[in-house]
Length: 313
Ligand SMILES: Nc1ncnc2c1ncn2[C@@H]1O[C@H](COP(=O)(O)OP(=O)(O)OP(=O)(O)O)[C@@H](O)[C@H]1O
Ligand SMILES: [Mg+2]
Image 1: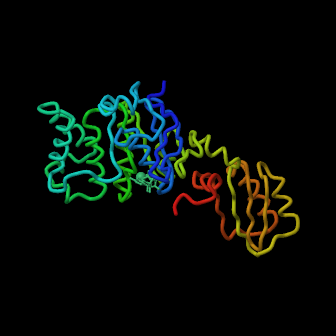
Image 2: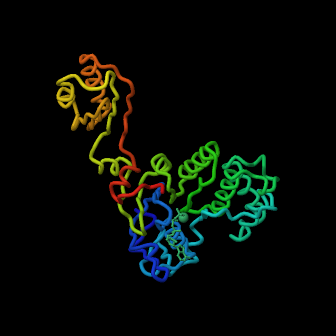
Image 3: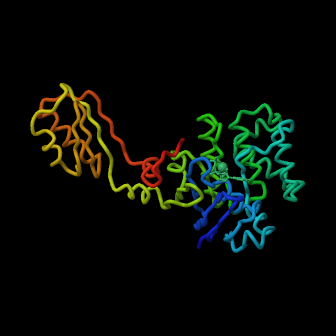
């Protein structure tokens, strides 16, 4: 049973259509990723799902409640962590969380306990009494995330939670996201970093210019590229002994071999299977390897294939 069902969401700003008929569903317990470049419409979609922005047309149902007709109900079951950090710099970590808790109508012992739990979760309990203005970008992001979790939402929307974060803090954020998922929360994650959605997401929707251009598990998406990878080998001496290219083409899984100067570019259905016989053929030919690289298919390549442009401009 999907927890979220979005049907043909559209958001227009005057002439610009920021979200152009987007439909998807998110199963309970999933980390669902929106991957797309700047301006793709990710934040606009999040704003509509979180009822901050009214769709021009279309609707979504979250846990049975409509985002257009039951906004109060939707607000009570979702948590939103916006792209822009929304914390009070002069307040401490715990004061910020208490402020947000009160906005959700929480208080007393329940709020104290929840703040403690969440500061533990994001590993900032020790820093609870420091002002947020003295925190690093990653620490601010983690407090921002804790603020979105105060009222134990069933569905958490995370809008680019790792922007401006150092690699160590990013690891922390990933750990936290997995912990939140394991505790039963369904998560929508948006990013323009393909490595992040590859690592985190159970299902990935690729977005460009307001539309979903592809969707699936990482494996399903990569199989759309229809190739197992490319092996590049630079050989010395330059040039190839007669028959080498033909010989390579006959090896297990190899679909094409291109030869230019000292470089051989080999396409293969499965690089791991093709590599050992290819190396043997090379050795037998008396060539030495100067450089060897294996490129596996990735979401960046798929994005280029689908849209004709790079994910990161
Ligand atoms: N309030 C607004 N008024 C007019 N246009 C807007 C408004 N908000 C967003 N847009 C436009 O809608 C499009 C989608 O923006 P959105 O913020 O949803 O993209 P995004 O995928 O979140 O991008 P980013 O990765 O940069 O955060 C952009 O072209 C943006 O300029
Ligand atoms: Mg955005």
